[in-house]
View 1 (tube, rainbow, N blue to C red):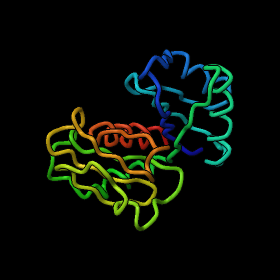
View 2 (view 1 turned 30 degrees about the vertical axis):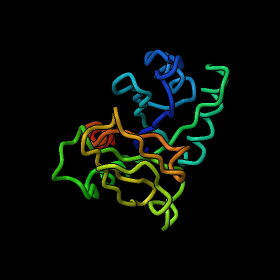
View 3 (view 1 turned 30 degrees about the horizontal axis):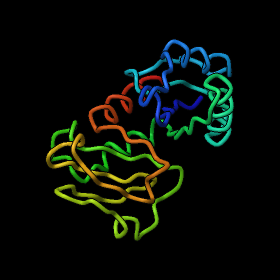
Length: 170
C-alpha cells in the first residue's frame, strides 16, 4: 500500500466549496483506505495499491462529477511529500511565508525567467514544484509564473505536516 497526498486546486476559494467530510467520502467510495483530510483547503490523505496516475484520474473524475466542474488534482506519495519538505531552499524563512507550488510535471528550466510582477519574492525550481518565498506575504503579491498557472500551492508548514501524516500512514 502506498500513502498518498492529493492536493486539489481551487477548492474552498472563489465560491467552489467542498465539505471535507465529502472529500473523505469520495476517497472511500473509490476504494482508498485511511482517508482523512487536512485543513479545509482540499487535501486528502489516504492509502491505496493503485498507481499514482490512476489515483489522479479516478479522483479527478469523481470530483468533477461531485462538483459539476473540473477539479485538477496533484498527487504525491508520502516519500515525495517528504522530499518536497526537505528540499525547501528557503527553510530559513517562516513556513507560512514559503509555498511549494505543486505541478503535474517538472517545471521547464526557464520557468522563473518568465515570472512577472516580482517584488520581493524569491523563487526556486523543484522536482515537480516551484518554491516561492514571499517577503511581504502572499496577500499583496502580484507574482505571476506562467508555468504555475495550473498548479496548486501549499505553505511549507502544511507540506511538512502532511508529509509526516502520510509517512505515519504507511
